[in-house]
Amino acid sequence: MTRGCCIWLTGLSGAGKSTIAQVLAAHLIDAGRTVTLLDGDVVRTHLSRGLGFSKADRDANILRIAFVAAEIVRHGGIVVVAAVSPYEAARNQARDMIGHDGLVLVHVATPLAVCEQRDVKGLYARARRGEITGFTGVDDPYEPPASPDLALTTLDCDAVECARRIECVLEGRGFISRS
Amino acid sequence: MTRGCCIWLTGLSGAGKSTIAQVLAAHLIDAGRTVTLLDGDVVRTHLSRGLGFSKADRDANILRIAFVAAEIVRHGGIVVVAAVSPYEAARNQARDMIGHDGLVLVHVATPLAVCEQRDVKGLYARARRGEITGFTGVDDPYEPPASPDLALTTLDCDAVECARRIECVLEGRGFISRS
Image (cartoon, rainbow over all chains, first blue to last red; front, top):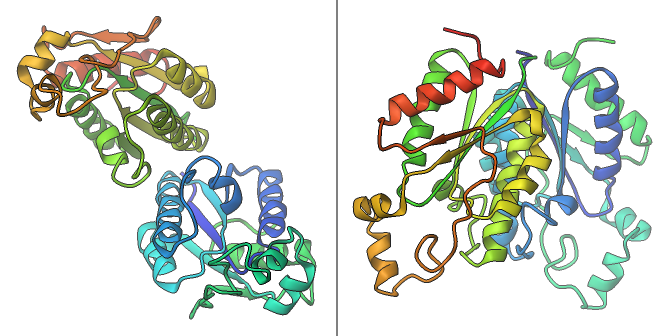
């Protein structure tokens, strides 16, 4: 059985997590691996339907993702998570569930101003107008991870380059072989 | 990668699903396999916390279990599900998600009268007194699977023997090797 691992992308809405996750997953699949992509927005349509954006609901969402990720890692699979996951405590709980050895925590550290300027989904504008409350970075905190395995600013590189940097970490940790 | 599979135990509350699932999982782990046990009652404490027992909520619960099971099977793992899963349509949807080749559907077909007489958790008594509504077998239907891979009455054999019969099916389908 190959060693399983979870690449967990955390960062603000619009930071580029989903795009990087998709590129990374595609690369790993091309390399012959089986990959599960757990995208926060997608997960909310099935695994976490009914959960909102209160702290308790956000935590429940993260722990559900972590539960699924932990099982996949235990079975030797690769799982890529793309979720805002704004709270350090919940991320640490996820790390405990998945196992320190199996987790690669990546901070997609695009600055708030850049995320807000992009505003691909128009959510920042709605949050600033008060139409959405509890929006991370506007009226809900984002706690940057204290010790990520990798931090990507995304300003100096595109999604393909970001994915490549993650793959270097995966190679270094022995989760994938050098191509 | 070994071939993944999902052993899905369906049946009334008190039919013996959880006990059989635990014995089966222990046997498979002893044989060196990695196993995820998704017990309906346990799943409701994390994956499906907040869901009730309406038809819509029961269906959502089954589809969540099926989502997780399908991913584990895709990664070559073994997952044992023990869930009342009373509706044929939801079970068929689960089968479609997991894949026909990867699913072993087991009807734990202990008769209602026997389950009710055992009433380990006292739930039938409460349902008969009207303290619980929508209880499968009392005021909510159980639709027996039209074409299970195995049906166990549990009257003629204990949990160990039931697990053994399931293992025979798993051997026959090539999911585990003959011990």
